[in-house]
Image (cartoon, rainbow, N blue to C red; front, side, top):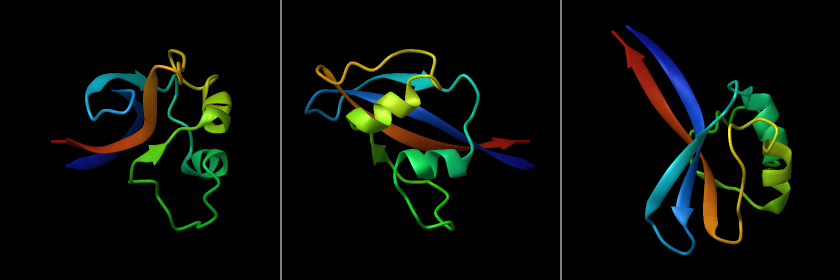
Length: 86
């Protein structure tokens, strides 16, 4: 059994907990790259939590995702899940 980590962008209706969609990364970025984008200085942080995406993070992520950000209408979060292959 192998474990893989998938990181993606969750999209929620503005001011709501209603999940509207998800954006996938064109290619999974490294944890180090994401730590830089989200200004996380702890090298032990593996980014397993949800991280809100602000204007600066969206600007740095836009070339990495298959889609675009509309921060006026939606709230975005960096999300993570474990995938277990049998």
